[in-house]
Length: 155
Image (tube, rainbow, N blue to C red; front, top):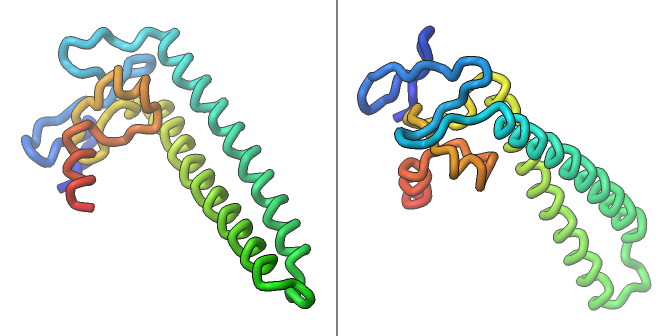
């Protein structure tokens, strides 16, 4: 039950009501919320861009760590079982950290793309506004609270 894209914006799957795309400098908000000010939009962009830089740096560091671990692991000759186990755990930990950073980087870059497209703050499932407060608390959010809860219940 995904939202359908139309020339005029996003049509929600539930109501087939067109939700117009945000105009330049104007992002979607829920009824009763104050509109995004240019300063708030600029702050959101700065935070997302800073997060991209931080995550890229973290990924580069993880890659260096993994390269070092692979180089040092050799064939394990002369290591006792504890040493080999510790190296494996350390390598798995670094791989998990790198995978998490990569996923967060993709989400953050997607948020910047949505900000540029004027769709930042619109739910990717129903097309309704996510809510300004939620976007400020979790700038990578792509789903409204209701759809996020449905997704989590499905597993």
